Length: 297
Length: 220
Image 1 (cartoon, rainbow over the protein chains, first blue to last red):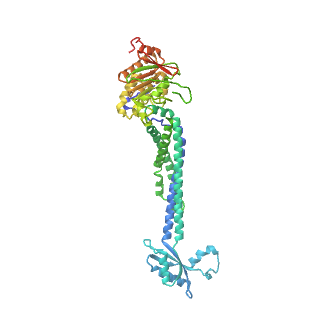
Image 2: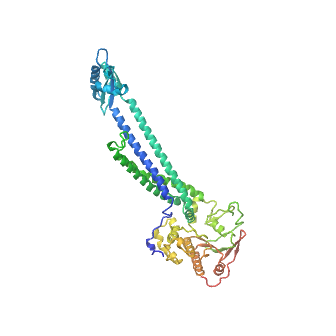
Image 3: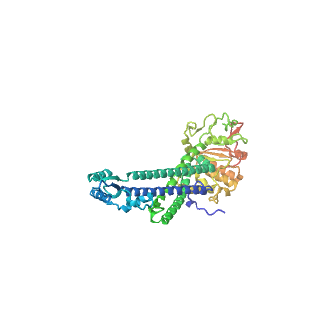
């Protein structure tokens, strides 16, 4: 027995069946892809932050290796170098490292040598540069030459270059992985659209014969798959955010590890995921549906 | 006209339907009645020759023009082709919805039409739950709901009782009076005999026009 029907309150029902047995598998695959995309985004953001922090530290410092000249003790040479550098514009502080620290630095390579003090270990001067207008290596070198100090200035530029290159590489790989995941999601949705159109060929035929335009029919599939992918994107994003939060909590203040410092704000990277998934799915479904519908005629 | 590399279904067909005319198409099974209707509602293309519709040669009309032309044609398909996941009301309203009309503008009309074809108590029913005759009446309601300029019906009274067949025929006549060109493919000789309408007879791929039979009884 049919329920009482009030025609005055009738609203058009969706032209495509709301439920489809294939939806579960599609949601699972797109959710997993979105989960991986979100992890990639969070990983790239954390890696970029680490690279920036490292380069920031290295840019703010320089190390000067001082070699004593005839008659002068290494400590005196180091003190003279520190004094010359302190007076240089763009230097906040120049401090001669104590001999013990210099020995500590080379001990890992030499082992526990008892008469290490007898070795001609060069003295080091740690220079802290002005963050706003740091002095560059030629300026530091000129200041040392002016005071007749024999020294080598290491402004860490080699390391900075390497870290920046590694940062760019991580960013590039992340973008590549992200694009690959988006392409995989588009391919999955295109496949699902193809299957959906084949399964609903009767609906497409009826709509065509009733005068529906290709775009009208394609839009039905576009909206449907965008909605399914949006739901899947939301699931994937929530899973990734939950994992990120877990890692942040487990990793303490340093995030996952000190090398990959995950911040709470990084979890926001998952926010656009449902929308992006819906957009990718809408594009893939529209393109596939239009092509197939034209072929059907 | 032929399907693929098969034999000619229709040959040397020269047929012109005047606007506002009413014809039956008869002929043995496989004579090409359905194929003739398909040519008119643009579901098939002639392998040779031309189809002119609403004053336009369809061979010259771009594909993008077909949807709007189809909206001017109502079709009752032999196999009905209802959307099984939509209610009777939604199925009937489909052509209006595709034409971009607002639900508020046609709700009442659809309800009245469904009542008229005897489905007033089944508006919310899904097609799989409808009996054969009810499904057929639903297909007819969908075909006529937007008052098409051409109405094509392929065996529209095949699954309904005599009384309902007459009721449906009266609906077609009423539409015809309002200006719709009607072409009905049928085997129902009794209906033809009692209608007083001209007949197009298809046999061996050829068509012959037969004059309207003398009106028998008071059908209308």
